[in-house]
Image (tube, rainbow, N blue to C red; front, side, top):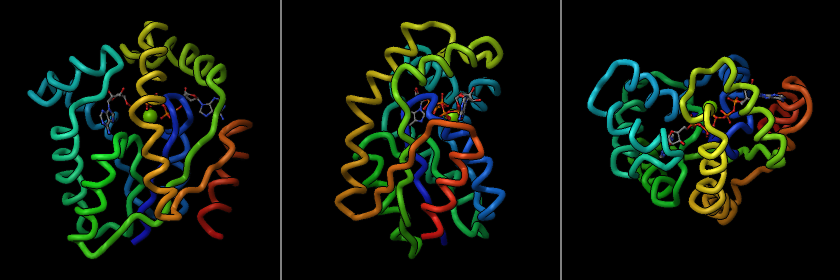
Length: 189
Ligand code: AP5
Ligand code: MG
């Protein structure tokens, strides 16, 4: 299996680049943010809970997120591998993912971390707010909060994969295709 953690701050291009990677490597894309938003649209209990955190730019509690992620993985027994987009976002989630994959006889191959300056992130999210309908894009204060939460709670997850020699930083600026090419090179070498 080829299991990749696609990592980066809000607006780094995780969703955009995931689409390219799943085509090229025949992987299943699991975005915890997308799954939460589908639950919000479906008005499920999980959706209601998730919305109360997402609208403020805070993380949904680990227990809920980890349980949901595991259940999504088990829906794809034939998968050649997964792109984890927006997960893990805490060290506890990274540990749970390792343990879970190990129980399936698998593991994370690498973390690809998209590096984008904060000003560029804010510019992209502000632009996306015009069309996305995402409540967490609409308010610049919530965008700032998401970036702050990333710095405080999520950035340390990179160290977790660094210590396993699985961390690969990738320049996340330039055109979408330029960035894809960098990701392909990082995966293939
Ligand atoms: P999530 O949905 O994961 O949002 P995010 O991390 O804030 O990131 P985005 O989806 O906004 O950005 P992206 O990196 O995917 O970039 P994209 O490709 O869209 O999480 C949302 C919330 O859910 C969290 O705040 C939290 O509450 C909750 N949550 C999710 N996972 C969780 C977890 N594991 N634990 C706890 N809570 C969790 O690109 C952004 C924009 O830029 C787009 O408009 C795109 O078109 C544009 N763009 C992309 N590439 C380029 C480029 N090269 N040049 C110019 N523009 C570009
Ligand atoms: Mg995304």
